[in-house]
Length: 207
Length: 207
DNA sequence: GACAACATACCAACCGGTCTGTATATATCA
DNA sequence: TGATATATACAGACCGGTTGGTATGTTGTC
Image 1 (cartoon, helix red, strand yellow):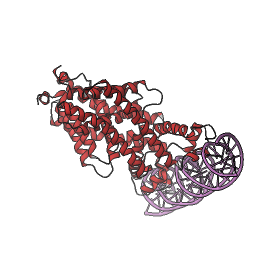
Image 2 (cartoon, helix red, strand yellow):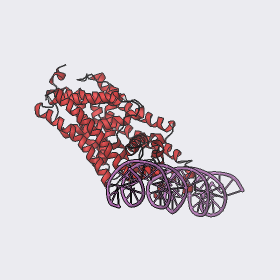
Image 3 (cartoon, rainbow over the protein chains, first blue to last red):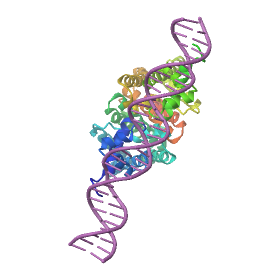
Image 4 (cartoon, rainbow over the protein chains, first blue to last red):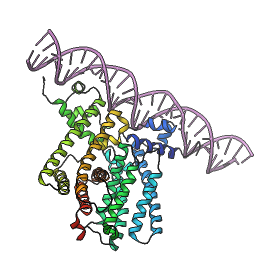
């Protein structure tokens, strides 16, 4: 390492912000390098092409994402033995995180890549699909654990419920951005918790 | 009209398909005119600029969209006096329509515009926001009508529930596209119907 | 002959990408 | 210890192709 280091990380960081803001196609390399404060030489030293950036960017995003998930998971599991309570806690931790966020409007890079998927090769698109599936499987395991202990009031499966919460949140990102109301996302997460309560918590029905 | 007419409509149609497929930024004018089979002259005769196309395109999409909504609305209202049943029917008509769709993968142009909103002016972004709000208000009226008659099992408001179904569907579009499973969307709509049933139908709880 | 509905040629700006050059750190060996 | 060699980490000019957009010409119709 000769000059001011972590240049690659800085490029990835600004690229992520820009791509989340304007999409991948509309984000030019000139744009990225100017915002990062480096030159074209620096960029192409660290990345073979824009497609290479796309790949490393989505991998970096997935890493951050699943690191957060793992942390909430650990904390939620530590706080309660009951799978139902752990699930509720997990969602609450997510909401807490959302509400603490500011400035860079919360957005999902996976969704950006999906809506521009013709720009990427099978490798990248496959990675996005697998990441979204992993996200779902996270929830699926939690729902399966709850169903193993409590009988739901409707005939619902763990995969379906997992698909629901991921869909709901992805859509909430869109509505929140359009209406410029970041609180929409955690509000919908809270509403989903009500749904889960209705499904699995007997006390809620009596009320 | 001198030559082969409805050129403008044909341009709008291919533009819609292309933009839904690759996004707005990645869709070039050359791309559109080639796929439509016209020349640049023809395009710029009907549209002042690409920004003008963006505006007319989203307005055209909104028209198609709300025409479908109105039709389902009419049919659902005609089939049942009970607001709850009308709501369920409305969702079923939507699912029916989804399942009958093929080839052009179902997608929401509003979502595309939201994720690329830095490309558009306040006028267009405002129109997208209002359209999504209108979509919500459609559902909101339905939920309000149901709540006026039946007491929900949880403390939920009509606006929140409307926000939920729109979020869920927008997100479902993303997951469906990523996983190449178009049936995901109607599956989640059906699941939401189960949620509505749990909330408002007393029979479902007894079971 | 006036006007709408195109077609065609062209342009400047921008795009992703390559090229050559250079400063600095590190490894090698007398 | 110091000279040399080599690899890394950039800088920045440059290139061909594509972009959105324009200017001007042509054709059909009332």
